Image (cartoon, rainbow, N blue to C red; front, side, top):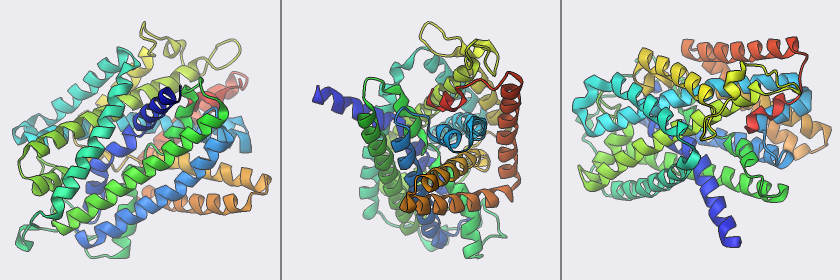
Length: 447
């Protein structure tokens, strides 16, 4: 029994962290582009990103303790301020799940193109094909979660191999590095200002932090105490793995003088190529990177369609807040209409942008609206319960999250993402009010 529980715990942990671990493949590059290729500022930027993620994670550590049945931010804000406020994180998460599918599939296409550059001219069709392929696999059932966990473990192992190989690799000559390619020259050399504006782009790394607090609801065979322990262990293991890989890859990129990559490559691919050469290890790393990115997309398909299913069946009479078709499941117990909606929205995003680095400006914005709701809710609950240490951590987290949101709102992409999140939340809230405020909204995140 203990062995089976341990296997379940490991499978759960590495499945849940597929999204944040996969974001290592594009978040560092996004920050470097925001810095206009200034490698000297890359390590402070990513160091700040990892530190902020750790502070936010402390809030979700608390949420897991308070709500071992799952629910995360929506449950927290509903408990603190009332159920109607749960639409803020729910709207943000629905936008974030859709963007995760688009960004992950676009990044998966980039990983393939980095290995086979002649495919560059087919970037958008490849991205669209991957969006459809992952949706098709998801509709065939949830057995793919084993693949998610395996892909995460394989990526971590191969990343360690690349990092070790990179320690003895030869850096690029200074003359080969151009710090202006693809960046914003107005930010070059701007020091602290450039770091502050690049941090929100690097915050693509933060997506998925809320996953353990929601996903523990999928373990009804465990008691509350076991779910708390597993959820918190998964959360901090995720932070440790993502943070360590991020800092190690960042240090290696600076040491090897990896510049903003050309159109047919990515920073992580250029780093792996410099560290390992065109070797079998490079081939395996690119293949596993692509697989992990697609696993992250599959996970978000399941999460987004699950929230829509929950919203479709809220209320004692099952009237729901979205059309009842979103509550239907196919014979593999997958909400097919929800998957279809996420597929359509993600395909439109990829069709409009094609490349993940163009989407990152919209990414990790909506989820920060969810983070802000969660941190403020936890601050209110900590104050109510006289938990002063927790209150201080919650307030610090709320201030940091608010600062990131303000910087995001100063960019057109960030403002668009926030408005989209607000529009979804407002629409759902108005329907909820019109239908008599049925109970159960806060539990939608646990679906």
